[in-house]
Length: 233
Image (cartoon, rainbow, N blue to C red; front, side, top):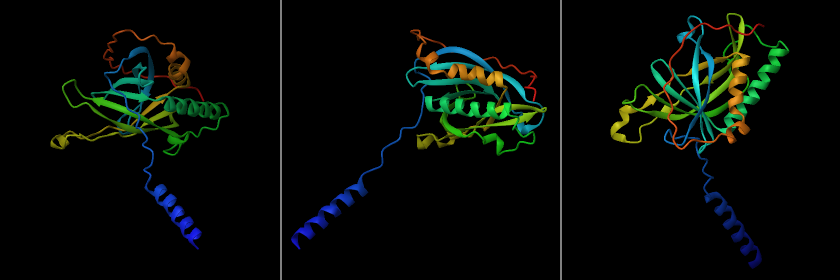
């Protein structure tokens, strides 16, 4: 009888110790603009027009590598804001996996020309980090956001889609909570050549080979808008 009681007490001790063990803390992917960085190139892509009215417009983004966080940043301007869209190693791998699926569907002619919202997230999603600011003296907002992968058609041409969803910025100082911000959700359209160019900058061997200068200054990106020719399908 005594042995059974001791066994039950030991079992209860193990049970309650397991119940009270806190779950492991998962660190959010974040990047500081003060970290060492180097501009490694630029890419072109298209933005979905506001309210999807009109034609998609071509834009340019600088590609910047942050070795300390192993993060690739796309810096661009849209709607009077400067955006820094950061990609972790996991996010870059998710992009490559999604692009491979899109290219397979493209070559096998499985893309639906009446593609809707479901197709815009067909190839999965990942988590990214966003910093956005209107002017140098205004609030610099930041937050994690989800990024979806899919495709859409414009002028009967298919495009690989990167959907940058909303990011929430909550001001840590309660006295300044009127600084809270929510970023715009935006769809980035890539031709196959443009998507492959971005994937080239996501290559880990390339990133590991980059020698970081002692001091690097990133430049503002001039906004360029012009029509683009899509992929034939």
